[in-house]
Length: 589
Image (tube, rainbow, N blue to C red; front, top):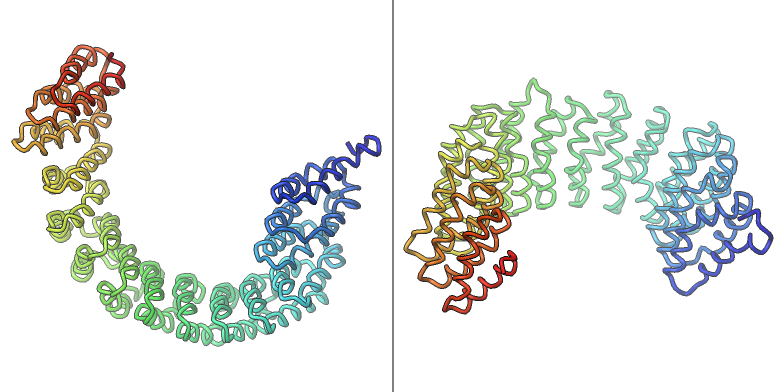
């Protein structure tokens, strides 16, 4: 297209300019998203000389248009003529990196980081590094925050003189007057430290880290905690105690809960970074304090890390540290006033059994599991039940059944129907973890008892539960264990229980397959079409409609059709209606 005659070759840029000036944001957005097509049509020369200057001049648009532009420019290297011309993309991206909207700036920085890799070392010093300096010394905080993300990508590939300038700029931004800039610098501190030579990490980064970790703004201090992990991994073990630990101790006791939360959240990473000796002397007491913190969010974050922290303790005295220092705190958290804390603990506490072994689990952990199984918060109970398998591995199924199962049975028979409902929902999970033999022996009776519960919601959930169990254990198990008991309820004097038989058949027919449905379930449904209670009869019609697709055409024609025709002449309006509907749906008319 670029090679066509003059007027035609201007057409793409004319369309772009028209659409970019259109009042409709969507049209402007669409034209930005087509930039690569237009650049291809114009060719590399005109993209550099016409398209990019035009885009640089028009950066005063809606944020979503600018965001799309910032993203597009990151993939433009080949469209401007390859790496030797990649610096042409810097002016528009520089402008985008200074706009007010954070999302746009971040995307511009992301694109700049991407294209920095395509600059040769010479171009990096001639074009890219001056851009970083301009951003770093800009009047507006927006450009200075963007600069923070660019230091680490150009530092490794420039001369030592330029490196010194970059370090100086970063130092300046770390003590900037604007909190937003200090925050950006703190968030990139760890990343910048990774590309610096070790001597400069000790001389420059540590002092910046200490200053940022003592900043008046907690949003800056908490980001310094993140950097702590990176810095600690870079330093030799002997320097950690003097250079990093004083700041980390201070952060773990910070007056702002957000900073303490960040320490708790990063605890496992910090533990790996500082090594076993410092962990034993410093981190164990710090972890105890976080588990006892006055803020629930901090306790929850620390509780989440209990298993990981214990796993990473040095093996020679792991058990002694856990039993003496960690377990007493865990015992307190089991009865914490905040449900998020209890829930966080319940999701990891079972993992301690594999670390502490059989005897300690039985003596110390089982009472805690029992307490959590009886917790009023359903999430706590679910987290315990869903992790039973790792306790089962340690103490064995018999021990488990003697200790935890009575508690589950107790909940299953609780006077409050919502508690019973919660336990039903956990049954398939429990069945999967305990296996079919154990389930039949201990829990099958419970599942059948729920089918005749006096609350409808329980009967409904129990029906659904049976279907999930059959999916887990298979049709043969259903045929031997479940189906006979369900069909036996068809003769129950209580019509509600007879209806539950129909609901179960509806749920089980697909999972059990054609053979069992035709030979065992269908005769019972057909027999119930003569029930004296109209509610049962119209549910027979609904059941036939539901199981119809599972049956073969012979059974449909010879057995189902006559029954539905009989019901469609029933004296009760509802029975008639559902029978006629079933005839239409199953195409038996």
